[in-house]
Amino acid sequence: MSRRRVALALLLASAVLAACSSGPTRPQPTPLGPASALIGTRLIWSANVGEAGVGFVPAVAGGRVVAASAAGVVAAFDRTSGADVWRVDLRTPLSAGVGSDGETAAVITADNLLLALADGKERWRVRLGARSFTPPLVAGGRVFVFTADRSVVAYDAANGARLWSQTRTADPLVLSRPAALAAVGDTLVAGVSGRLVGFNPDNGAVRWEVPVASARGTNEVERLVDIVAPVSRIGGTVCVRAYGAAVGCVDTQRGQPVWTRPANGTSGVHGDDRLVFGTESDGTLVAWRRDSGEPAWRSERLKHHPLGAPLALGRVFAVPDGNGLVHLLSREDGSEMARLTTDGSPIVSPLVLAGDALVAMTSRGNLYAWRPQ
Image (cartoon, rainbow, N blue to C red; front, side):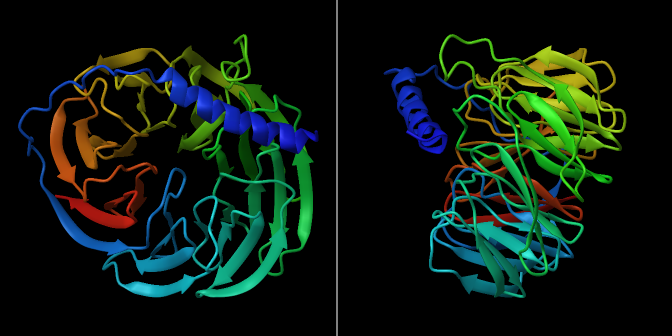
């Protein structure tokens, strides 16, 4: 069996194991008290693009919010009003969300085609060598793709010509969720297994490689330490989560670790110039000091709630809930400042900022944009 088939077989096996390990009962979530309203928020627009799933995070660029559905609808909305700018039905299922720089939007189909769109019209398509669960990154006139065999591939955004490809050796099991892939200055940063790798975006040469976590389990599932999206970038420092193993920050200018801390979470992290926020697998909220990694505080007020990755915005940070809620929490201690409601379906993709608005996308494909006041 080829390595690619082994990877996909193990991927399916991990899903079965995860379902079996969930057990017949789960701990009861900590009860939510009455909703706080210590800060004002206003819903400024809502829209729909169709049912989505894990990794279908909207992209924000060029004054637009671009979103995609699992069924293949891709739409661009005005970030201020939510009005449709363009919308297209590709009539083919997608495996991941959309990437955009405001001019080119790129998506990946379930049968491994990378499609580039401009103003809602297809510009080009190329076939990938493996599946991808990570939205493409469109930056600097290029489209970067991270595939399930841990290859990073760069294409010309104008015509789809392949510019370079790098494959890193790693365990065959992969997560069916987005990996870390970001542009930091003139470096392309990707999470490969438990390492953060900096590439030259022009030719794919590796500039540096920093370990965040090491695989220590006794089986393939326990050894998963892939670095998951989203990441927290302030200047040249990028803070990330290694799945189920650690949180750490990396100096991307020097290619050196700043700090790492053991952490048992499965969603990415976000933060500001002082703190990095994360949610653990049991719903515990944690804030680490960005400069040292020392814990600043922990909160169990949302323990056992199905929480996603945080998003820092001003004096609060937002956390999505699998019950369709968005919790606005104090950056100082995690206390509740406000609670936002959606259509009640899970919010499985990371929250995003569109200017000064907070945007959430539910599993039903509804987008909500709120502006804190």
